[in-house]
Image (cartoon, rainbow, N blue to C red):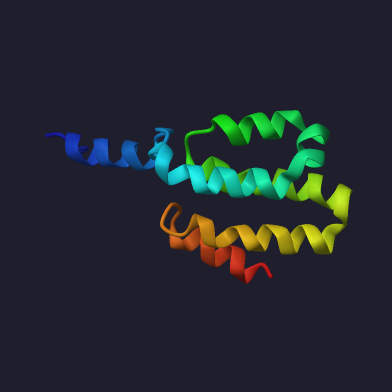
Length: 110
């Protein structure tokens, strides 16, 4: 008798797997452009690795989590309050691309 059925095993591995969620370039482009505009030329010069990541990542989740690195760069340039306001302004461009639970956890953190 099989205790773990193949369908159950595959569904669990799908939940725990590290498969990258790909989004269409058209859906990510507004997010990418908004993040690059918020980072600005000073921020891009200060952290070229972040600029490169924002330009070439193909996942909305990776862009969402890059906000913490953006916060660090913008805080050092403009102060923490202004950086927080700038990042809160980015939140609407992620609507429909990331789970609502991430959006709600961000709102609860304020």
